[in-house]
Image 1 (spheres, each protein chain N blue to C red):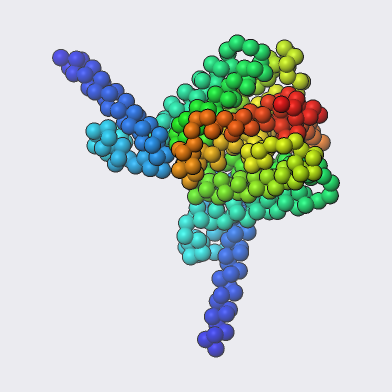
Image 2: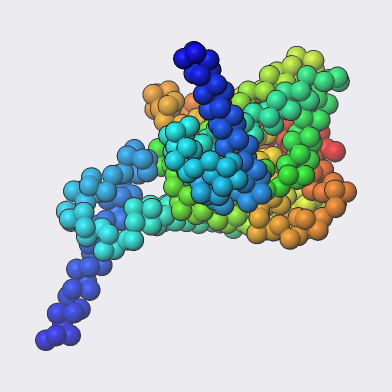
Length: 210
Length: 210
């Protein structure tokens, strides 16, 4: 009997945790980390505020988990694009384009992941994930150098240039202060923006005018 | 009499403020914002901890001021390099190279300004200053397009690519976790690193293989 009750409690606890995580994710996607107040999350998740602190040591720990969840999804997408068909330069271009397009389709969440001023604890995650992106790009650049479609270069350094260029160039267009402008932009209108970022990145890598 | 005393008090207050700012600057340059504890700053400045809070509302406000002071110095240096001789492409290359070299010569402060996880209040300053760099680069790119030494492109977007590429590619080399490695590096040994960053940036801008 005691065992079965414990199992039930565990399950209930896991469900509450999942609801807290889902509702926090939703809050951040709608208004950024800044607007994700613990009382609001608790209300949405249907739990007491204190329950949140039984699952997460602090608001920052909860946010760090949301950051990891959302960013890992993007890292996986980049890895997927880099594992697709074509030579390394084509795959890199596809991965960069997809990253930018996905960001522009979910601008609030993308801005929160890329640039929103956050607590140092969440910022640590951001630094770690930038390394994860760079590692993926570095591997693809090395493959491109071997294949001969990318000129010989310091693949590690170029990978961080790519990460910086694509992230920073999206900060302005994604910024919530430009949201009215961004939301009025149709998908097609993002093309020139994405194209100019990709152009810079691929020229930087290959030294070939596009 | 009353007037002269007030003047003296004002002067003493200004001197104390300056000492607090100078000592905070020194602490950050030595060990980053994280290590700059208010008690330590007060000790170095020879004031009571409470005095610091008479001059700055919070530790974050004090840090934001240090951030502005230190970053404005670098922005001015970039502006200076962009106003020097040569065509716009040459001036941009000079400005980027100088930025990277100055960062690698003062790696702890540069890391704190570029990448150290900081309070959102300081992070806001970082976002603002990235825009200041981008504005300078954008102007130079426009000049280069007019001069014909840089191909036609979205100058605004390319300027943010430059800011991102140079900042992100310095994060790893400047990181305190790599400090033992960085400090053992002589100035000359930074050349390949700086060269590879500049190569990516200038290729990105011009599409011409270097």
